[in-house]
Image 1 (cartoon, rainbow, N blue to C red):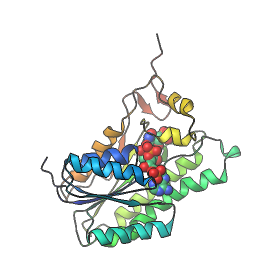
Image 2: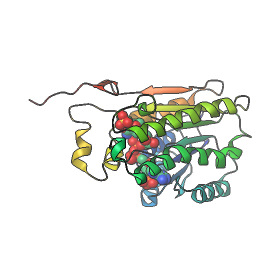
Image 3: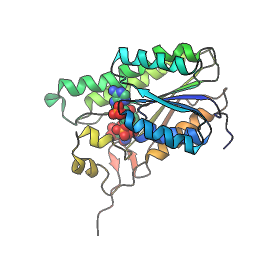
Image 4: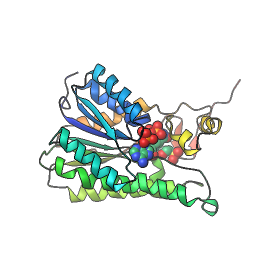
Length: 260
Ligand code: NDP
Ligand code: 8X3
């Protein structure tokens, strides 16, 4: 498929699963070159192979832990060794841990959520920006959440982290105005990926309950939105996009079909 993205360099964090993996395939179908990052490199290896079959002329990967400044810097050094230019940066790595009320919150959960969803985005942009600035028309796409726009019980730290992502996006949009670089946030509602499995620390039953009776977003739905935003002509910036499944009108307003 001929696209403005053909032969462009696209970096995706959190590419080993969910939105990131699905986005890699969508970009590959448009002939984009892929730089994939996550901690589970075995999955990245399989994804890179699949992306090549789907049309990516170059799909490469490297270990990345966005919660660590040395890891982010080492990752971007590796990127530099592969390409002097970066056109699309998708800051997707992140997620939630736990659904505890604040009174019962765990430091380790809070710290991980801020390390990944907030500091991870800042670190990635700081490290990768010099690869993008010489190429106007590029875009930074941050993956936020409806949780960053509406609070819910048990979500204090995750909602705060994604609200942080939203404000980072807005600040960057202002900072980069005049450079020709675009900055966008895509904020999905409930989507069935490994998100809830991670949030509930491997409790598959509890994770499945989140989507019971609902037709949630699929990873592919969000991936298509990511690629659509990246594919707009260079003078068009989709600043903020909220995407929810039809069954979810608001964080709390979810239509569930009952069985039988
Ligand atoms: P998944 O759990 O399926 O994917 C999360 C990805 O993030 C994985 O590839 C994981 O890779 C990566 N990741 C997590 N921590 C790190 C880290 N420290 N360093 C590098 N990579 C990391 O969930 P989703 O695809 O749903 O989530 C993607 C993004 O979308 C997240 O930011 C999430 O908060 C957001 N989101 C999800 C929604 C949903 O309902 N699913 C709705 C709205 C937003 P690995 O473990 O291999 O490092
Ligand atoms: C994921 C969506 O509503 O579970 O960011 O927080 S929600």
